[in-house]
Image (cartoon, rainbow, N blue to C red):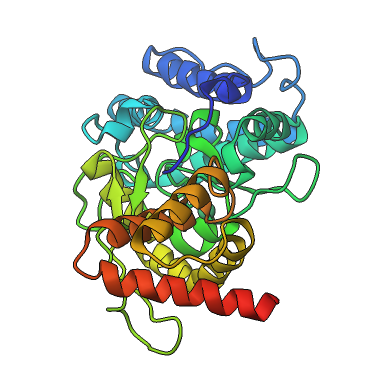
Length: 354
Ligand SMILES: [Zn+2]
């Protein structure tokens, strides 16, 4: 991912703490030969009278009472391991899926933690988490792709992704540490219920932590101008999208969100528009360019004073594309051809504007 969220946005995790704490206490009590506590016993005051949670807890408790100690220990293990965040994102710590717990307690578990997740919305915990995230988010767009704009707090809500899918890891279903605002395309069209910590063959893998420190960058420097598909006045480069950062986390990110494919689509779709924008700007602000040095200097100015610090809707790709063109103008074996193509483009746009 391109940016990460502040860990402070996960501080209000009391719903998860209360529900998972109650489940833990119940399972431990039963394993000690004691009765599992009632829902309202020692419960957070705001949750004690939540009928939806109490009903689902009672259903969970009833099934738990009929399990053996060994089975309950498995449930306890899944509860702890699925919430062992961020360790599970490192790809090594054990993280049993829902299939590791007895069949008859799977649905009560999913129902209970779904009710806990729903409570986050009604207590406006989700909204406060989003406000904390949005305030400092560069470019106000989805950090999983960098090409989906986020709406301001109070407008239509962005999706809330269960980073560890709740269909596989229900015990983390209301844990803010596992909940990340995400653009709708990333969430529903690409990630869906893909397991970020296991590949398709069941092998564990490392992934980015949405509230961690690591992030990725994008380079288009190895793309090759004029060698892409199509011709006409705006011949496409053959794109090479390089994703830089921790290799295993980057590979997971790319597989889950199909990043390279989407970026190639984005730069292909916008190439002509971005080049025309540059040409119009150059004609107005720099003037006509006629030499390689002119073009490189104009691209430097464009990068420094137009594309600087931009993070919104695909700006990182636009910047990467112009960095590639600048490099190729200066150093590559096609610099002469590329330079004269850009000079002609600036000239034709200036004539159109005149
Ligand atoms: Zn996205």
